[in-house]
Image (tube, rainbow, N blue to C red; front, side, top):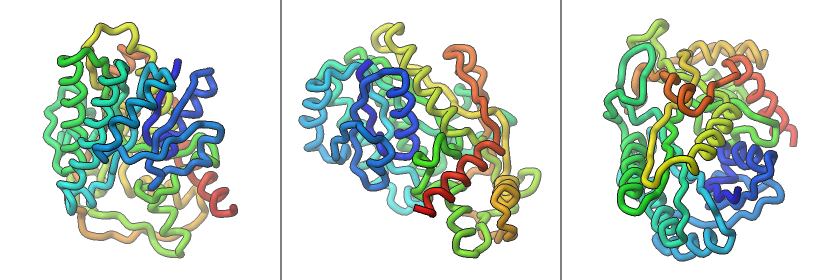
Length: 325
């Protein structure tokens, strides 16, 4: 299969690119290289392009046509919750605008298969031990709103011209498939903890007064290699689906881990024994977000295979290796 991966030099995108190459697919990447690192995907053609720029549509269409692309995996987006609260209009411009331009190019080039990188943030303050795909979607920050609107756009394109799409609602992604593919952007919890430890400073925990067992936020942490496997499962189902088909799937483990528990695991794995520093809550952070994964297990045959300990150990090894370079 010939696949275009947007954001292909990014943390998650590079893991998917590596898996696609390993099974013999032809891969082309598009990335603005703001956080993407070309060295993550050696040998892959990378087109440096800002998808949110309306002028990107003709070039994208040309790339899709020239490379005879059969399916697209779309990662390219902004993803910081606090930044989205501070710059809501820009987040919509980046995330919805970029997706809209991609879909316009796909329609022009006749490419009908799309896997869209969505987020568990679409559930907002949903409560319960496990959140299923039919739970109310009431996001509490502009980042989550942009992801939900993206799902609507993918579905609407299916109705309009037959796009087949899967929207994967990621829960919290961490870990590394190899040292080269480690998360270096310091936008997620685990690399944020590592950065503090590198500076000899205590890890920050934003809020310890939530209605959770230890007062800190509870999240479902999924290993990035498991997440990459889920993308291949999603890609492989699209050709067998009717024109216009669109479905959403959670990608998580079904298990909740608190921020304080993650910090403790990092301290144990790293051997750096700095106690956490409790700060005020951040705007837009819900208390607990844990996936129900029954649907993706049933319909795509996917389930996570790696736990929290493996997530932290792989991330720490990649972090140490990258610091030594």
